[in-house]
Image 1: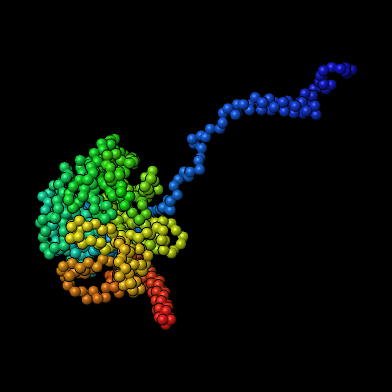
Image 2: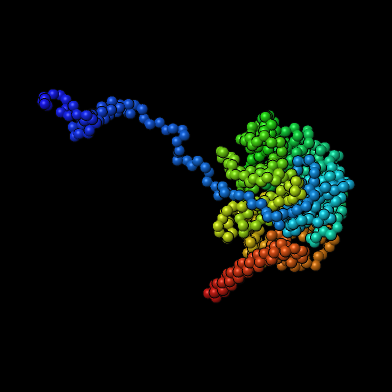
Length: 582
């Protein structure tokens, strides 16, 4: 019998009835939930008003986390085996130098030689295995420590040696058939071995040398003497061995590092120290001017012997702007800076990788991009001038790694990935041309000149460093309409009548009158029609591809000339019509 009037539901006595949902249970739960929400809102409103939301530090702000850069995806592309230089006897010297110098025509490498010092000069297109009896440039009585090509003459190179002399060599245009022992000039002034040589970046025939006698000497090569014993200036501010030298853009300042681990900024004409860094936290080994940024970058070691690089203001060397530890290796770090793209490359001796950073004028000054990695360690490194790069493949820098373990020289191209095959104006701004802006006498008298600029676009003209006067503008417009060579080369005439591309033994070369026409056949820094005949199938294929490239380039050049001709014809027609009205 079921009793009525109780407080419990009528289904209380049934087994499992409590778990069966009913309409009353749903209504009761809904009422409790609404009541709970009302109580929470009433009691929590004041709490929310008293504690506003706080922005967490790790929360993403509207500022981008990474810098936007068109060079973020730059990658290193090593050359194939056929395009490397194999069986090259690279020097075993432990001196901390590059041991390699490159220009659009040749690659020079310091090599081993019995009974003195020597280096090899190999045409850039002559890749593959090197003949063991290949001729050398030899004339030093001691090991060669440094070599540098003249930036305004691709056929002139300077070398310094342990025999305390510097020699200037003229490299013939044709291939060497025997050892070259006749030098053009010899500079005798240092009392101990000479470890560094540097050409002035804007003045012709000015050479700097640094020796183990703690002296930096300035030489004027614009003389008739074959042996020069007296430099025009001797800088004696260093107290130990000079480890590196670097010029600013116009060559008015010289930065040096010394074995006393100090960085000095020197006025090279007077030999006066303008700035000196005595910062104890960074022991500098190499130093480099960063273009026109008015900053210096040095590589060295920290207090804990970690490899380190530091950025400095060239007007205040008391404390570095920033420091960055790289690793704990012991090899010397070689810095290279590309002022056109503001990219800094760090190459370690004995390393296989190449790090690169983007440099800016604001903090953070150095932005890490990425690195090129390889298992082959480099003993030395060479760099190609910008005018020798392959712009059709978007190449912005090229290294030549000296790999002693394989007796190999491996080119590594830094490439910006682009889909378009047209000329990329944004990654190729005007760059320094192979033409000086000052003579040696002008620079020694106190004048400074900015580098003469050129465009890397095929068929382009030299860009003047300074604006032309009005009376020269008309003549320049007429000159620009005439055919010009693809790669402008400095037309420097020395007192003995030689030009940069002339052979030392010829006063008036037969091809001098056709120099402009002959330069138009240059592709990738060499003459297509004066190469040695191919000996292997690979060389034959390379020659075929080069000729195809040359044909394509000549077609583009011909189209440009046709457009210029039509423009000139239209201008002449307009002038005649204008004169007819009068």
